[in-house]
Length: 581
Image (cartoon, rainbow, N blue to C red; front, top):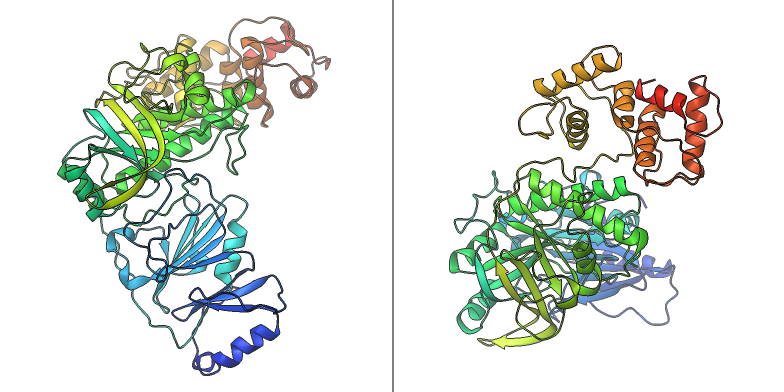
């Protein structure tokens, strides 16, 4: 549909005629929650209007008038249009994960300034999706529109937004000015901080009045809040920097949660890749989003942020996908000075990270948040993880799920948690667990930075060419340039100090040179796949399994280097790779 958000007196004068025309075209008009007219033909859409702002939505979407149902939960896992201001305390179930498509249209004049950010657009052309949502302020109509979506529904919600019309019934309102700077870090310090005792998590951050009532009357002093991730199922209208500061200043401990990609074998719309390099990068990207959200809320470095991985069937590429994702998640958080945590069920994610606790091919999470609904307020993980793992004040046990409790006259549906947590220290940089599997190995020069630089620094260190103190720093500094120059000289390559395709190929292939062919497995195959990715300038799957894809890549490499193209990696092929050809 064309993008049209305009306001004209002609449209306003002829609004009844416009509605009649729409009905004649098969669209059904719904104003602020009225049911669709029965018996009308439909072209698959109906028109919904709120305060003079009008959009067309699919016929099967629900419409909820929040003035009529003020405690309705604004949840994004059902195709729904919500009209009006959400209640400060919504009646939400504790566990809502995942998104389909939903639109919230609320009055702009009721929006607090600290809910506004650089993500809030004022034109659809400039509106980008962040964390599975598009936020659009239509000042001409005086409304703020939040269009939440899963990966497959972004086009649908953009079509809904593109259908918008503004009539003379609208009352303009200005978008509040966003705070000029990031909030100051919490005076209470890193979260959840040092705490032993009861807590709870809820789908949406409760109102200030609810938090005060529960602080005074409940046994809880800690709360899990969903700060980021495109799979968050509930709206977070209360969750602002001022809300966070208010709770922590009053004595609440917060444990921030990210709900992003889910296990590769799950049914969620946004899943982790089974390719190790891609899964790792997805974890790094998720960490960047969580850090940005934490900083915008004033949650400081040193805090732990927990990745919510819902239950899944363990084994094979599903397990390795989750572990690679959590490695990237942990490394990304560490790079920003945060601690990493993981939430999952005892029988799936918890069992997997426990089984890999001492596996140096993965980077271990710092905190464990496990769901085992056994009704016991303790941190005993039973058969799912040895209790000597994550034993230094690094545990949260979700021991009861989805119960409604009432304190001080306020009822909230929650999961009950028991915490034994401490601030901890972010580990110093180390090459243990640093990712070296990428879909491409770009040219790098002095001044560059990022995960690929860290990988190169660790490869150089392993080869005997030390980039300097603190390796890996992720910064292509003078020490890295010197190490690359020394490596290039040793390999007979042109000494430039830059990491080009030839230098990458030689560096990644360095090591033992066994004969490899279709059916081979192991570390040497992994090195071969990395080196071929660099040498050919295309992605070769890096999984340590010499299959048809790797065989074809070997044949292509051999043919392009005037070698016998038989798909078997012997001394000549290894020699060419290790010399950077």
